[in-house]
Image (cartoon, rainbow, N blue to C red; front, top):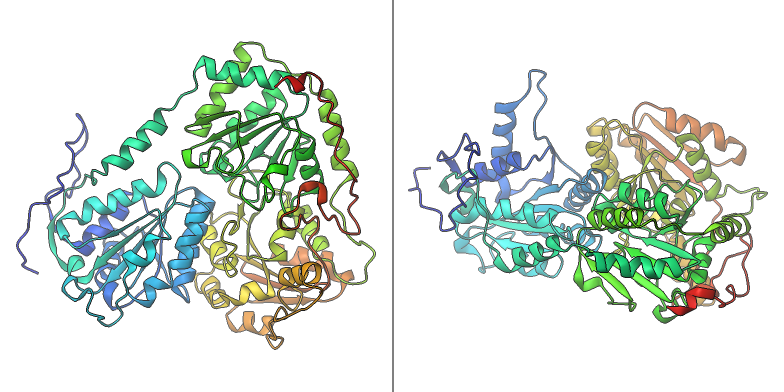
Length: 625
């Protein structure tokens, strides 16, 4: 194309003194080539996407970039992974981001290609996952004309993403893309969508090699948060309250993982001895095998975690937002806590659901390090022996359990065997439903980014494509998709993606012949009227489906006595493996805190011990705050 080059309206900021000028600065590139070069500059290692007419210029630029920069072994620097469906691409990018902490990237075409990305984008927004989605769009002049495969993506995605850009001025393309990555990873992470018309992809541009859009409001707010630092007075107030507590507890959320603050949390616990419970999204933020770990709290949290929340007199919330699956009845949540402290990167979350007596808005890692340093410098030593003994008793007396004598295969037993063999070190992805909660309850997570699940949105079909993305992020890790028969159906086409790319992914389907979680709710709250929860779909032969998609190891487990040997073979197989387990169709998820109920009203089921009331309220010195 011989189109005249134009001066960008958004000029890049001057390079810092001594900075190396980009080797391509000033070169003429097409808009599509600019997109790919920005990807390379941002360190993108893999792309996920499905082609189509409106994105073909970018795909062609990816092809040429990989051909030009291939290694001596022919390895592409930026492979593009093609799924069965664009939604799969979105969840692969999200799984990559969740497992690596890097920005996941998906590239799709216009119209249906872009609308198929809506659910992954909203899912990532709800769970604060950094992602950049590039969508092709019809030419600028055709926008609004109902052109072939046109959809108003900037309007549709604006309610789902952290930010959406529609690039109609070619000279703003490079700065827009660089800004998208900054937005995705900064502050509270989230997905950013960049909609690029085809004529902008084909435009001839002068590559700057640097520069972003101004966004003064966002940058000012971000800078204010980043500058947020705990003063001596803040620390003194925090420890004055903590020193009065007899039963302090940490409530850690996904923000600990997003902030890279797990090590700082470990150090804080080592210094002051507070037990830790985590949200569903926070699993792995603190080693769940630690004596002070209480695993997960909430609607399907462990009984002992929920009872500890009932009993605590001081609660420290770290990167957690008191959502309805944790604090379904906010006024009854942590009823004995006379002091609640909260640290978060997002000021909108402070006091939003539960009033707090102390808070700090700023980077979580830095805040924990500051508190730990202050406490050590001032000789803070807490006497928590009685509380530790109480926590240990809760874990012993209200341990997770199930009918171990049943002749039917229990899903909990399958997961316990997986946990025994992996030592809590596998990367686990899940679909959504009962299997998701069983995995959260019965598996251990020794480190961050081992647990990938759709938390806030609860998106069925998430597990398999997210596991694929995770395997690309961590090629040497054991990655297991724990799925359900109903959930995996949503994106079952991605089985072929696993074998196409030769991924050693392990896919486990706990088959209870229907929507088990929906059935459980219907049983408990709708008098057993099982409307549509069996899906009326009983014809699927998952083993034949897996074999048809190239799985050399695909088995069905139906006999309890074969469980241990089959699971061992499944995990030991070197390539892709698929295991379907026919489980007890009546197995339930317990404990369960019903909608609008408090933890004191928790349903523990037949095999987990419950208690009738929380501990007495005589909090001693803690009653002073």
